[in-house]
Length: 345
View 1: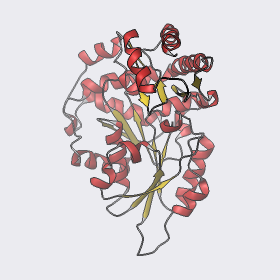
View 2 (view 1 turned 120 degrees about the vertical axis):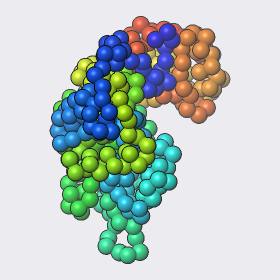
View 3 (view 1 turned 135 degrees about the vertical axis):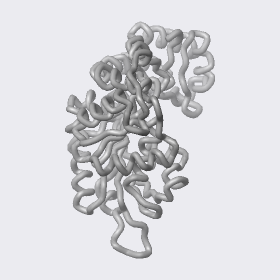
View 4 (view 1 turned 180 degrees about the vertical axis):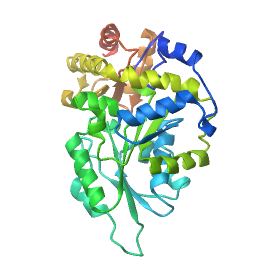
C-alpha cells in the first residue's frame, strides 16, 4: 500500500499472488454449480471448519443475513448481542428483509453474552410470543476490542441451544484471528455451531467475499436465500481464486498481525496523553482514547495524521480503533507512534 491505513483490516489490498490467481482462474457459471474454483473454495472452507458444505457469498453482511433467514421464518426470534455487528451495522436486514425479531443481550467486556440471560431469553411455548429459533454469537467480538471468545463458552452456548431445540450461528468474520489468539483449531472452536460465516477479505486480504458453512440441508436453504437477496453470481471463480489463497495461506500468518497490534498498543501505552487497556489487545485491534485534558480531539488528531500519510478513524471525540493487517509492518508502527507523539500537545 502507498499509505499506512489503520482504519480497519477491510482496507487490505489483495496480495500479488492473489492477483495472479485471479487472472488465471478457471471459471464457469456458479448458478449452475459449474464454476470449479468456487466449488473448490466451498468444499475447502467447509472442511476447514469441520462442516458438511459451504456457500460463497458477496460479503459478511450477506452471509449473516442469509444464515439468519435460513434458520428463521417471519416472526421468529434470534438472540444476539446488543453490540454485535448484525444488530448494529447490517442495516436491520434481518428485520427489513426477513421479518425476524431480535432479542438483544448485553455484550460483556470479554465478548460473551451472559449465560443466564441467554437461558432466560429463550421463549416458552406461548402464542403471545415470538418463537426463539436461533442464538447468534460473534467471534472475535469486534466492538469490545476484537476479543476472542473461547471454545468452552461456545460449547456451553451450543449445549443450551441443543437442549432447547434451537440453532447456533457464529458471525466469525474474524474466526481465524480468534483461533490464532486462542491457539485452537478453528474447526474445534466452532464445533458446537450449526452455521458459521467468515470473511475472506479483512485480514485475509481477498478483495471480495465471505463464506457460510453448515450442514448440507442448511446450505441448500441458504443458497435459495442467497438467490432471493440477489447474491447469486456467475463466473465468480475470479473472486474465489483469491479466496482460496486467503483460506490456505493468509489464515496461517495472522499471528504477525497480532504481534504488530501488540507493538502498537505497548507504544501507545507509553504516551502520557493516551489511555489504553493492554489486556484487551488480544488480536489485531487496538482500542484507546485520548485523555480528556489533552487539548486535541480524536477527529483533529486523525486529520493531522493525514500529513504523515497515515489514515486512522476516530470514534467519538476521544476514542480510536486501530486495526492491523498484512499491509501493516513493524516499521509502519514506528512511524505511527512517532507521528502521534509529534502531534499531541
